[in-house]
Length: 280
Image 1 (cartoon, rainbow, N blue to C red):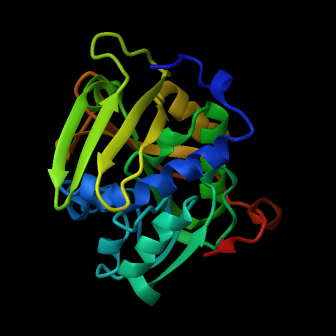
Image 2 (cartoon, rainbow, N blue to C red):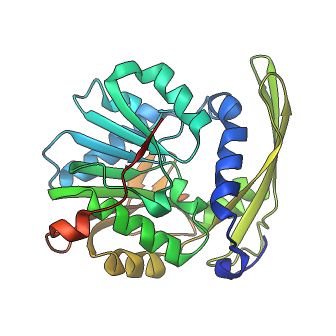
């Protein structure tokens, strides 16, 4: 655990650091997460979006990584655009999706306007790699600019329970011809609300590169405030434990919080404008 004030840790190189982390993680990511049930999780999130009124099938996946967060949406009939800060991650996503998805390099903190989407989401704790409330607000505002009228935004964040468990543990395992070591620097007894947590990733095998992960915990009150500041309204908040969702959110039990949002009002043309995307 580094600090309870994420803003003091930010610097001009934060975007480069995030890109280096994800580029280094790309070749190991799917081996490291091979037990994660992505199709089940995206199905759960889709149910939440549909309960909030989702009707269309245009998806913008923000921080899409290697594509595991959108690949199961293609057979469900979704037209997918995905973006990520890491070109290395996107190359692996492109190997899966081929021409079925449009992929672009983009930093979620400065999200271009790719179009109008019925569903915009950022899942699998990508939001926690934002290290300040200001970055969270900027990301949510960018997601809102890409939202079609009547569209839905879904994102998840890690809870204190996640940082008191996985982010506070030493984990080592093998998969295929690779071995991995995850060294969480949190504390199971003393994690602070709003703190920034660190973990070191190492291993052996082709493409395995040592690197450091940093995430910020976002408590429910500051997430709700950021949602409002971005011109959104929160339609639902749920907590996740072992793949199932429940309410109310309980940070002492749930490992993730899931937020479902909609635009508080319609956007004008000027608000939707942004710099062109850099396609990969």
